[in-house]
Length: 178
Image (tube, rainbow, N blue to C red; front, side):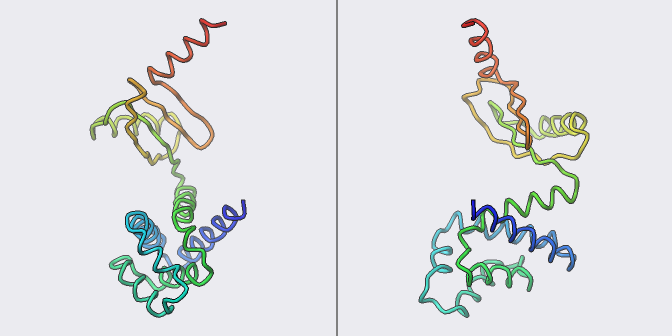
């Protein structure tokens, strides 16, 4: 619970600072990149959390890891996380920051599970239909789940639309067992 409160505060503060400096896109990309790198290479997280590595060395490592996404705001933010021993919250902060961006831009984030990979044409068509249905722009996170057998499961922030064959079979089984 306390981590989620801290995560939300860090993300909101960074978003407000990024908005003031007109660096929202740069911060969004930098957060995603460092979150991706730390997920792939746990050694970066270990180095940044190690108590015996000097802060100056950690700062150079962060600058190197940020590469083209480096901005003074992001560097200060990451150093703050390191100093406060909150760097482990980075993936959650990146997610919360993305939610802030989506809310600001009027975009709804959706999780879509499909039984098979969707072609680019199918993705565009699905996105168009979902935008019409939800009456807002959408950002889809599409995952393949062969257990669905066929169809899609679409999850918004507060509702789930299950149009999969597996879901239909479960509903049929529930009706027959009554």
